[in-house]
Image 1 (cartoon, rainbow over the protein chains, first blue to last red):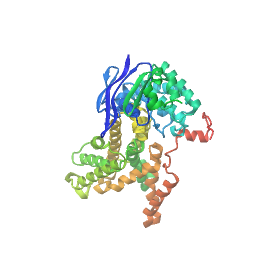
Image 2 (cartoon, rainbow over the protein chains, first blue to last red):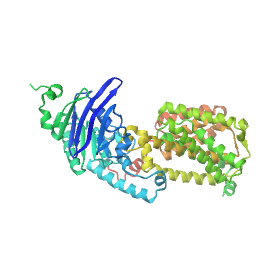
Image 3 (tube, rainbow over the protein chains, first blue to last red):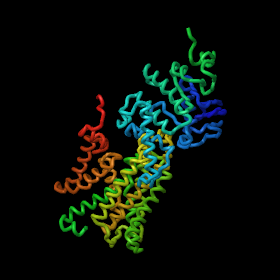
Length: 254
Length: 295
């Protein structure tokens, strides 16, 4: 069953067609990769799915409901979480607080509850705290929970972003170039980590990535964008051997 | 209680302590807007004067009980915080600062021409209901509630908005709504402080709430350290006392005050306590329960 589908989604920026009639079906429980050269519209696609842009035309269907036009915070509450290509952490908050903020969309405490520490709020805080520690353990940042987020190493910052996104208890996780700037062993770790969270957290993962090694190894399905058009999609093995894809993106092997 | 204190403490020092208490309430309000949520507001005195005038007019002309006047002042200020916040919070940084300056000026000019407020002459004969005990009881209560609020779901989302608005939205935070909430909390504390001020001084005039007052309050937040409650309190104490201490240098007072600000910003650019957490303090001095971190 498709958890997310895009039906003829186009995005114009003042005459520039960043996405042209893109059609996608993302199946639940899979890792879906989106690849394409720079400027192909991959991040634009992410920004549409997460509500930062409203598409010029077309529909985005998530869990059988049209979601285009909803603001980002609503989509987060519906279970669409994301990380960013250029890391966006809350720099001057502790690692732990970064993750705790991530729970905002799935918790309820209001102004009075928060200020007065009413029983409901206290229960919620306890649960948040427990789960936040679990997530930090999972990404291996438990011993740095009190450091400021911007004092972490690059790879750690990426992992913290993922932990924060997982706090929303999402059904769909969007990773925007998760392997960017990582060295070979960090990439290997990342790959096994992504597979682990997909299985453990019952997630569907959509990722944009330039590192073909990573993409080919962990994605079940791939879509290829070029100049805003989808030029191919399907199971990884098929796409890898598609002549159009090789020509426009993978390059002809010698 | 106040009578007892005045037997032992010089009236002048008692007066300064009351002013510090009132300023702490005002500054904690501004700290939520500017320090914590990161929305540069340079019109805090405008909210303060709305609270002060509303409370004073209700006490003087309508003979409301003190508590009701105080509450009305805080509520009126919060309402204006809401009205100002809703359309303007899409603005950022300098633009928001301009709007808040404009707002405070409008409020000042309004009271300059407002008959029940005594116009430019000001409003006198406000019953004196405020003293050291009341001000400090309220200040302490507000400090405690503030600390609780900032360490909660709502408080964390305020900090998140300051640090990265897009990431905050992606975490499910309705940033517009929370920014308006921050404005309302800040404005209501300004209104409360204004009401206390009016019932302490027994006389208020529009020039008490001019642009310089807003800047003075903003200085306290920045000097203490953006978003830090101990910082806001320390900043308030230092900057409330500094002009008084500097009386010894007579006419050079403002010069020294300015120099003090410049020096502090050079040596503590994040404010006195802006980048110091209780945790760091423990780590440094007690080295307790903290794993050492290779540097």
